[in-house]
Image (spheres, helix red, strand yellow):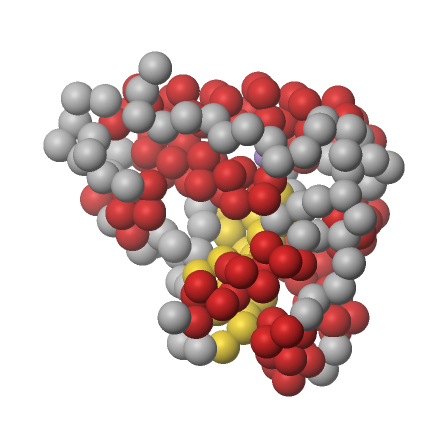
Length: 202
Ligand code: MN3
């Protein structure tokens, strides 16, 4: 038992059916995310950065061991991802809806750019909508890197993030990452996305 813990899922394993299947969510949370937490604790226990928060680790990742980058990134990204989904989905509201329309033209235009980033990421990684310099931007990162890390091309605060590792979709979608990315919009928790955006603006 270390300082970092696997967060409980905010819904049942089958809550995101039919878009994300029960077995994928169960394995993804209880095995993959759990392994990132276990290995992050191993990587920080007894070190001089053991007392740092996850956000502090991300911001200084260039100076830390690669195990902290991979597993700390994995822990941050998945904790962010679970909260960003819910049964029922919906549409963006409030200042986030306005910012999406003024930046991209429409929600559909954002989806096109975002899904292109998800499909264009070669191998494993993440697609992101981030706030950077007061502006919404679509980005992607390899492996378990994220826009909070001091090593990535485009730094910022995540508003949306989509896991495009094969473990996130292969049981249901096999090689069809495009279908997974398109269907994911049906389970986006826009209240959480708005909260992420509003917090990032402060
Ligand atoms: Mn994953």
